[in-house]
Length: 186
Image (cartoon, rainbow, N blue to C red; front, top):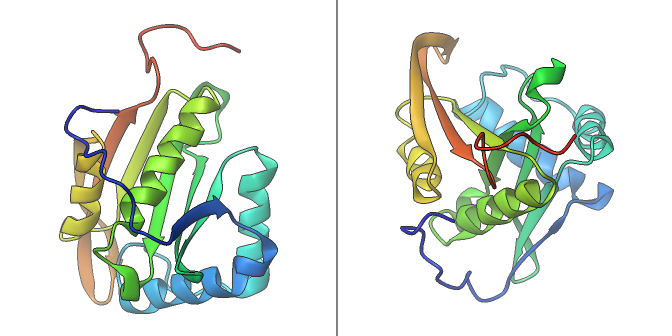
């Protein structure tokens, strides 16, 4: 973990655990609001629960973490790692996704989810994590990733369009474990 990351305790009552099928209604609802109202994702039409279940199962079937945060027993957000690209040479690289329910923003939920996601992916022997931040104005997501040592490696200007505007996409990267210093275990 980078030296500048605070080791402060997560909020009292916060629990991070693997997602289950029972979490899919809350995950689907949170993602639908992001699709409808924001630009963290460039998806235009919110997927239904059946599609979100298919996506969750796809992540889990690859042996990658898909996590849920509960604060005082209530759904507070979710995070998962997915393949960065499908080509074999990228198999040690994942992309992270973190969504926090607006009622819990600024309370350490995103940090706890990302910390656990990084730890779980490192334990799996993965070597790189990429964050694709949906718009350069998403300063909360950029700051969250910077807190954990991600560095901006590129900004694609006008890469996507949503809500009648062009969006700049920020690419950030974090080396996991030994990163690219040694060959991975195959």
